[in-house]
Image (cartoon, rainbow over all chains, first blue to last red; front, side, top):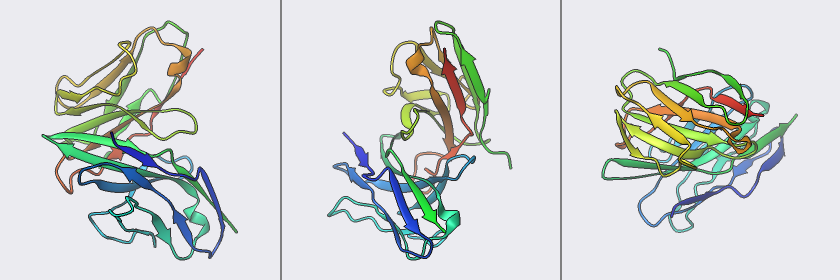
Length: 111
Length: 116
């Protein structure tokens, strides 16, 4: 069975402070991990994917297979980063897709 | 271009009533997903279509839930004899496909269902 754990439901940081949103997964195969974000009154949208190895809005995430983690990081939080963040695990096989989302972490950036 | 749309945006139903929720995916997207999101929770997978084929319906909570995508585009999620525990936001998402680089899901705004 696959599982995604986001241990913090709420994370409050001051503006300019570093941010780390934790995500751990459980899957025996080769995973694909994503971070989705939902800003207030907006729909859920992709933030970044591990296969892209990109930095979006200053956020990065590295897949650590040894620790089965995909933590989201940003060196300096901005007020506009306040949102709900969801980690998602994709697995595929035989044309199937299985997607498991974490419970989400609400990031609150304090001015 | 147009994103994923869902209708209605809000639905209030009396317990026992049947409801139908519609999803219009992005044109050309092969994969379509339905999720249920309860208050304070992440999206929970319900079912997945590849074109018109329903490849996975393991997340449907009971046989009162039924989904279809007859022509491989628009999809309908039907809930029969609604119960209070069905109250949630129902999200639809579509993606280009299942291959690497095609899996990014584009979400609709959701349908908020309240069963009284």
